[in-house]
Length: 608
Image (spheres, rainbow, N blue to C red):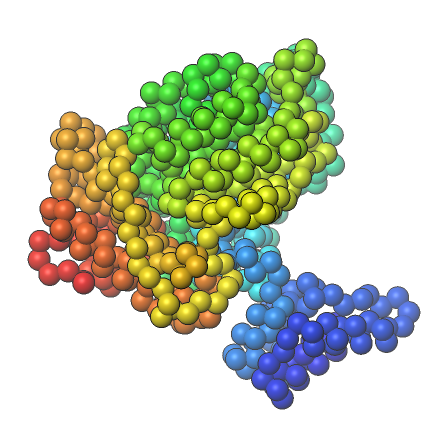
């Protein structure tokens, strides 16, 4: 391994560059000359080895004579899965501990090793289980992997999954978020702290081995699958009173003072949180619950909509009214949150025709209009109520062509201010009894649309990703659309080919709505809201300019336009739902800390 790495470094030192072809040639030459049982070298193993030597043997690493310029090129050529951070942010997904759920949807998985709706074979779930569902351990583990893959980790989006967030005790919720921040704030001490924390779980008698855990829950899982126990009953017996987890749960609680300390540290941390996402159901969305999650530092909320058809919702035991869904959208938007919805096709009782019109309602009607959508086809998983419907022949999965055709229509119906984040879940093919098992479903759908020569306006398709862009060719456009509570301005930087290089979401709350609900809202009359600012491109480290379009003033110009727009519309103040790690940036632009947000007056001189 070291021989190959030294040859690569020599090439960089002497010629100042290295391409993929030359890298492959060096690796092939080395592997061809191997004798005995020496392990072959692969590209994906080189970067972890480099960081291992740099971290554990600094004297040896110093002898290699690696300059900053050489290291930057080394990371670029050896980086694995560059699209992981092509949006400008490194994402870390964490899973909360198993917990009883206040809902029991027909299609929802009942894996008693996991929080409701998640399966133990999903990648993030496997990582969570290996780390005892501890938020600190999950972050440290993922941070290590991202670093070894060559990704910059100075800007982090935290995604907290695990069923319904509001079903957990409030002390646990505060503790969980505080520990996420602590893991990012601890820097070089985090790895040692993680070892000590792991030791505590081991001493409590807990295992993190998948086979051991599967054996431990096997009896209860079988009873759940056979309908002899509910998921909640099994969870109580496995993790409730009298279990090891009961004692652990007593330690997994915190107050806001602890969280605030971690927030303040993160404002100048090496790994800053630029986005925090939680998921919950729309029936848990109230002004009170949104105030709480905003205090946690949350900037985006995932809500499980699944359908806007009352009959379909009822048939699938989704006991949430469409009116409640509408009110959730209204509150989320006025509170400034980015809204990501989960929407399911092929639910029990539905049809391709109904699914098509249902999705069109979601992305065109002023009552909804999410910012992002996870658009999933329903799949049959063992232990769900849907198994009975399949056995009796009243539910069948759509055929592949039928599903692709439906997704093509949905994609083409998606406006340019909406992002389809996913088209499949990370459910293992082994867990899917019937239904779509293809992980490249989006690729098939986009390929079909391209064959037809149709235009895709949806955001994810238009993102520049890792492609280079001529900043001078970018044009600034504003798209205006109405919701029931706001006038939305989607301000975007686009290339001549309409690729998306950056955008801002500006909400102008309607005065009538604010007056009527003033007692429960965190904003006053004539206060605008910046809900999201994002500039794409390969991640550039903080205070440095990379190859992408970040740190070239594009974000600042978006904010200037938002301020000008809000002032011209008669708004007197503008709020931004800033994440903890970008507070300093907004302060530098003249925003002041103001309760749940940062705020600037529009009546005097602006940053613009």
